Image (spheres, rainbow, N blue to C red):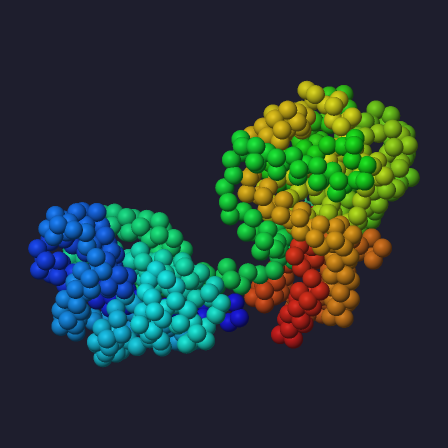
Length: 625
Ligand SMILES: *Cc1c(COP(=O)(O)O)cnc(C)c1O
């Protein structure tokens, strides 16, 4: 229950009782008529939901009615007029009110279900305490009694102020606002919910916004109902509603949907991964891709990435590329290698294979040196290959092979590559930002990563940090228009950060926030320490539970770990996965061909307590076996 909906606060007339909210209407038109002023039903309805004396004032303040008043009385209306009209309103309403307490369809059933789920039921209203005595009494006789009823008399002011909701929360002992839903049927209801910071929900059938009797509503054609629904939905959303439901019966499903968002599972996967709330919040604003506000952000981001990659930034540049990480890999392979070039790919997993696959698809001459899924690249074989094939121009390797979790020794590989004077391409997708590295020291010419890995952003673009000198030679090489790394670079340089084609603005903003948070954490060193600790606790804990890792520990990265399926039990990954998912943790299936494995990532906004929680849920699973 910690992070789930704990209370629903209903409005009264038009929401839970009095279909169409008719009681006050007749009286409003009557009291104005007695003054010689004819107001329309629509005018009488517009302020519905407000405290009734405020409602009177709101009608008077409408330009047409203010005008009529001045003509009739030769002066503007004043507080005395409001009070006088209201003194007519109150007794008339009290007289007819007992006839307008019919409980709406579905309310009793929904309340029963809410109570079974332990969800409290509160209420607020535009009626006064005295009026509510009549209405609540009528509702109770039909079986509807909320746990709490607050009127404006209790808190001093009515809607759209949020105080009646706060008093409900206080009386019922329910908090925080994100665990509360307010349901109402007028614009002022919606605003009350918005102002309180709770989920503000509008209901359509029987609402004051709809303004029809049960009989009138039932006679509408489906087409007419649809048109009306659209119109009212728009009114609620314009007022700030979070959700709109057709009727009460839809409320339980809505609660389930909100709960899912409130209790998300932790992604123990290598990207997309669990991001912080602040990174997610950074996406809640729209940006113009053309405007300098946005492009300045891009230029800073490009510089920040170079500084993250090396202490010697002067000879490097960053090219951002739309799409997932693979798009950036393809842009490098397709642009860096000239027509007469030849690529050597060192592979020991699916991502190395993917580089080779890209090159072959682009009809680039390629040699693949495969060391198998559980062994590092053979350096002497690399030297032999480079010697035997002097026409090789480029060598590509994956840093952390996410297929298994193996960390390849890019320092040693880079040395050999450079001894032979070749251009060095590194897919550091799943390691950049999480493992300290300096592309200058490592002699990397192209380093590729993406937004949704160790920098802890959300998916949507990748980036290449490249040697300017090398990239400068790539004009006209590209085998694709949209994935032309050189053109994308030149476009960003000449356009001061403008992307050639629409850029993923929200993802970029989230990424900027993620970079800020990386710095706040203490930079790549601190993040590496956290990931390494996560991995250590995971590996030790799993060992205690008799799960064996796929890799020898000296090959293991701190990013993701592969484990063999356990022996001696009827283990199915599907059951295992669903069990721990229900406990709040999502893991990854295995990706290797030779053994049955699964993978657990420990990157993202994940710390030791999360890993301990995961281990506890795995232990609980084993007890069910
Ligand atoms: C995630 C990843 C990629 C890119 O995969 P996409 O699905 O295209 O984002 C490439 N290489 C490695 C090593 C990765 O971990």
